[in-house]
Image 1: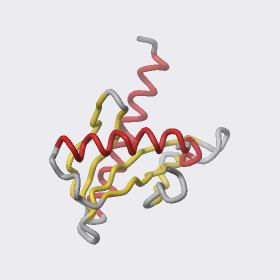
Image 2: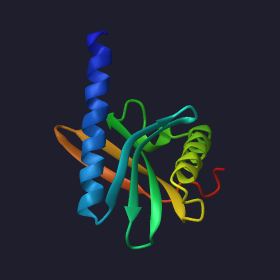
Image 3: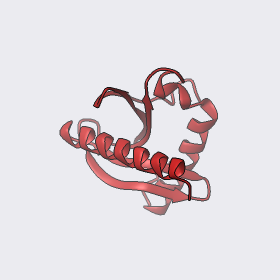
Length: 127
């Protein structure tokens, strides 16, 4: 594996760690990380105790704004793939009747301090 590839993996893991910690600090309970199925991958699956919803979280991180905001990388096609994977998870856990949503945790790196934005229920008008 190339060094650039390894750097990307490490950066992604660091972003997911920050996102999980952010969610926990805001009362969420982490149910799973890096849930993978043929349909796709979900970075974090959590429970939002304020609503009872199962939350499927896509984490995107950018260093600088040369390539736009991190949340702009989550396209409608990506949201449909996340939704398909989320439904598979709910069926697998026999929780088809559970309320659920898809959120994005967008992390922007300026210097060494992450700026974290939590965009909730991004499926509205996307599916």
